[in-house]
Image 1 (tube, rainbow, N blue to C red):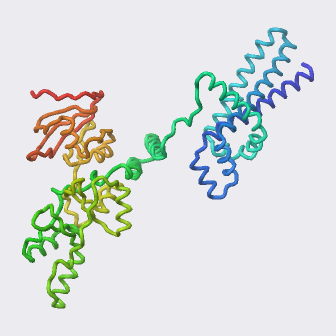
Image 2 (spheres, helix red, strand yellow; image 1 turned 30 degrees about the vertical axis):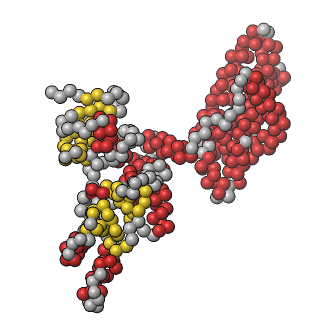
Image 3 (tube, rainbow, N blue to C red; image 1 turned 90 degrees about the vertical axis):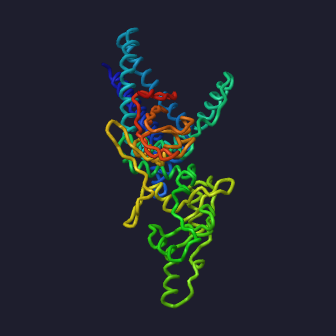
Length: 434
């Protein structure tokens, strides 16, 4: 082998090494986390600034890397082919093709890209100082290439668009679910983060305490009875009504009521319950949890009464209800459990749940995906899908889940057994009674 051939082999390996560098740079700069780079940028990392600029010019970046990479790979192949023809004649073309295909595939593409894929941040920060001036120098060439490509696409009827735009919330939700599947995010954290993202979509009607379950006090009673009810209540804020339970005229704060009692008993002032009653705050049922949270903060209030479009009372919502929607049920030593809606897990991916349990809570507890577009609670979902009020013992299949009515109180579905079917069956089907 002549000295010229040795130089050719060394030159080929040098070109492959440089091509491998650009292959790693391409993968590293495109695979690195935007959030991580942004964080490093805010911390003052100058290389992170370069990476962010390169990513903002992704078309020019990719075009420049492809131009350099292809030039290097073709150059290396040409050198090796010329040497092989000199050594083996026409058969050298076949030998050079086989050798260079293996070399380029393994050492020029797979190996550097695999490394960059496993260490994208390290690679991106490492290559950014060199890639930034190279991309700038090659801009006239890459810009011309883009014009030719766009013109060719236009000729065949393809118009350049903005691509698929994914909302930031959907990106975050997908990332949370992905990390949960990979084990990096536990179920409780996934539920909490998902609830925060849902606050701009869910309304107060989805989490409110229904008017039938509200603890209220009627003012058309004797003072002693009212006092006993207030002092025995497990709540610090209690709606009060007059003449009609739906006619809420105010909110009693227990702390204000105790101050009133003290002033009456110790200071001898006349008892006037109206001094402990705050003006009620009514909000529409369509307001989102995010909007209501901001409203609570601005108003410095913790309770609001929910009304529908006709002004009829629907229920009440508190600041604690919104917080519980995010972090889960919060109980204290005085909590009576009257609002607790239970989900009891059973074997074989089955559970027994109160009809008032929300579909959202059931999905989070059981890792299911029952759609709640038409109803907020399990009972409401079953009634909507069945188009009637089922009786105890009846069984239905909807959305790939089995619903069995266990108990009914008057017209309300109080208890249900729910299980996920092995095979999805989207069609409605009621099991025949034996």
